Image (cartoon, rainbow, N blue to C red; front, side, top):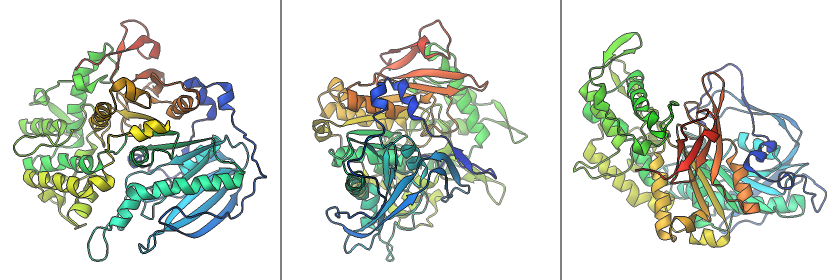
Length: 551
């Protein structure tokens, strides 16, 4: 889901700016570490087909190697995107493609490994996927090799972002084997293959291995830590889609609420509630900057807007008690008909993308579900891709939620709180999650972190290998709707932690405000929160300090 929210409708290709390696200085890395680049290969660099030993349980179908010249890389559009993406100044690299299959499954998972011809920094970076895509289509790998990494990804043998045609077999049953690929199996096999390719092309193995991903990519990173603790030295897994079997059903809740209450708000009405909540809770962190510093302290009651008039598409609309009730249920999150809480709701201050609506043919507003939960419920739970989601009642929603838990937790839940093997391996797990995430409830990640603490000896012990940072006002995987500062280079902080033992206590973050001014903040190590000191420029990180949360 990383870039699904930002579909650029322009006639020109989207230009992608990669974070330069020089930005590592912001994370306090030493010059020596930053220029560990240009690690000499043990053998002369050649881009030719290499022999690959098949990972356990697989067969290698083919291996190809193509030398790519330095220059501008144009990544063709992958549906639902309609425009290509351009990455400039990409170095010359060797593009190795290894196709794997699991005998008897008839799957064909492609592993892509890109190896810079010059300036390799001795590190391996794997990049994860988005929505129902298991991997990267070129942009993230291009950025990685620009910064000296050898990079890899896998398509797991499934489709792009919103193509779920692979989900069901011809008999209408779930294709469990491909779901296993998407959930876990293929990313581990990609790791095994990529490490082989790197060692053979450069004549020496990578000194350090890193996983990077957000959303689906974040979930994959957690799965690596849980099931394959020795694969990576460092895992950067942001806004992670963990608790998949629960959260993905829970994010259909806003649609169920609107359908059951027969009340469909327009975007501007939802915005009115959001703006009122931000106005009410913004000052709680000591500074009025348009950002709710800690949504857990926000007690805004949506009923305060009843009777307020807002302008929507040129018409005046009055907020009703029914509107307020819908918003309250969406913020509260899914519950059973008896009132038992099932999962977390939309964070206060986040956009209402999950409560999308549209005007139907009859002129009345109807629900427009977000594709990821819509596909999951219709295809994997109902086994009917054309199922009418608007017919789901509160009672049936509870049954679907529990069905998803029962059938898919062990395959793709990604919520095993026992990270003891990852800790023993010496791995480091770093996560940041926006507190205005409109697609994956932030509290699901907090819940997981607290369960890890309970199972692994408490917060201090867990901080030795797993650190979480919450980003106030930041939308899903940053996104264009963010109002708060987002991390500037979390990967740099992770490499400093892995390679130099410098565990991050804060993450440097920034954003440009409406005037173009750069606003900076230091994101606090969970559970601490940022509070304005009472003096100094509110746009300067130095004017804030991290204090214990007051929930």
